[in-house]
Every structure is written in C-alpha cells, then in structure tokens.
Length: 68
Image (cartoon, rainbow, N blue to C red; front, side, top):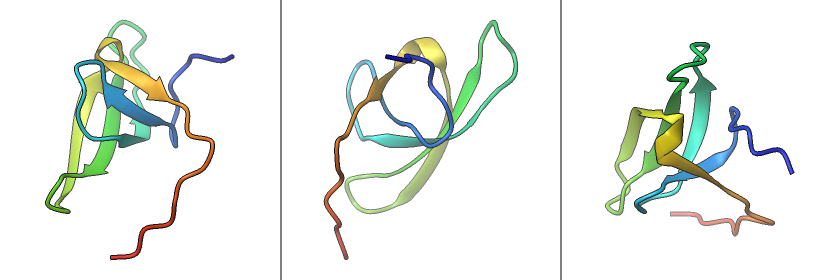
C-alpha cells in the first residue's frame, strides 16, 4: 500500500479530530506542508496547513452521501 499523502486523500491529525481532505502537498521535502480543508462540528468551512508527520491517512471504502 502506498503511504504517501497526496491531494484528494482523507487525513486526520494523529491526535484525533475532524476528517480533512488534502488540497495540496507542498514541494519542500523536509517539511512537506499539507494544505487541508474540512467542516467543523458546526458545519463551518475550515482550512489549514499541517506538517506531514502530524497527519495519518484514512482509508474509506465508501462515503455516505450527507445532504444538509
């Protein structure tokens, strides 16, 4: 299995929290900033940059469709 995080992957902080979608992976090999987007528990759109070592990739076989 390929453990490299790439755009479109679903990730989560190793400490837990919301599931996030990777938008972009930076080019700097040392720190590889990962740009992610997610919706918080109240439905607010959020975005942030994370160091790859703080994230784990989440494998989802299928996502249920949620319409709000």
